[in-house]
Length: 63
Image (cartoon, rainbow, N blue to C red; front, side, top):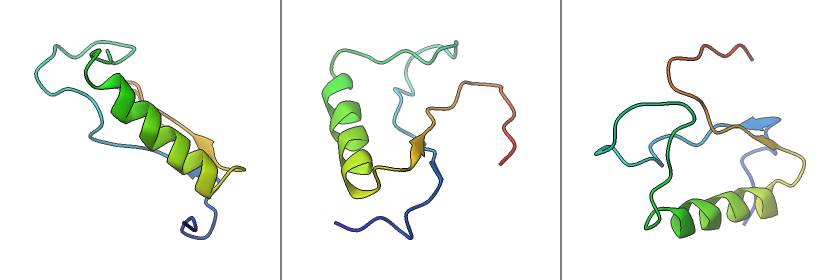
């Protein structure tokens, strides 16, 4: 699997559980943790030099 141009930063979205209250850091439900870890491992494998940023709620980011 090749990353899309080997981006400097990868920001996964919609990985969290929409049924939980919004708080920082975003909670990872036990049932969601394996899927999140699998996705993060795939990102790191495809583009090892990319930084993976799991965004915090209500936090602005500048790239």
